[in-house]
View 1 (cartoon, rainbow, N blue to C red):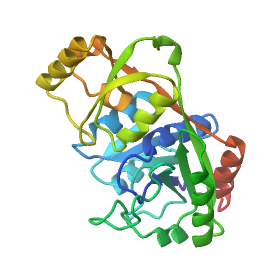
View 2 (cartoon, helix red, strand yellow; view 1 turned 90 degrees about the horizontal axis):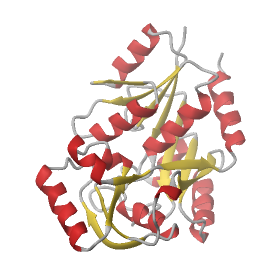
View 3 (spheres, one colour; view 1 turned 45 degrees about the vertical axis):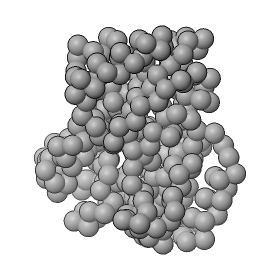
Length: 274
């Protein structure tokens, strides 16, 4: 039987919400299809692999062809790949490109002068775009029209970042944050939008592996400031277990605006050749 593939990737370096988007698609489709999420194995991307494993049926191998082969053996219907748009060895049935509305394309230049992995005109080759936003701003409309000018056929979906468990936080307290994610700015904006009083922000590189001394240092600073400590779930899953009870993470989810249109679109693409 033929297996279908979706790739959720980006042409912008870092922090576009790929992994939460993959998990959202998994949630939306898992009742109708025998489905897995998958990611090519990278030693330095343990955080995303743990997140996918915690919330979905997940596969990882040294290369994506291996993932496809094993999925066929398991008689699966669909693989949702986290990353891999630039991998030409696989002809995905459906390609999604993720952007963050605040960063959009940065300075618009390609690596190393800017954050783009490919020129924006490469949107001609893709099926759909996700634009993650925290607050609706004028930028969204501008982004939509820029994308449509390049590829009038491409479908665009907006996804709103929300905090799932806001009630467990005492918003009268002061907070110290730390994170090692692709887009620390987005984490900060989300806290600000939800009225967290953030007095100090500690930022590490993306996919950072925390040493005990770093955690100790952060905890001491927080204590001195008489504040509470908060991080992202992606950072939390990598912390040594003996520190986890001292640190809270923000449980976020993406709300797809016009979810039904998205489901219809995916199904039309996945089933069209059957």
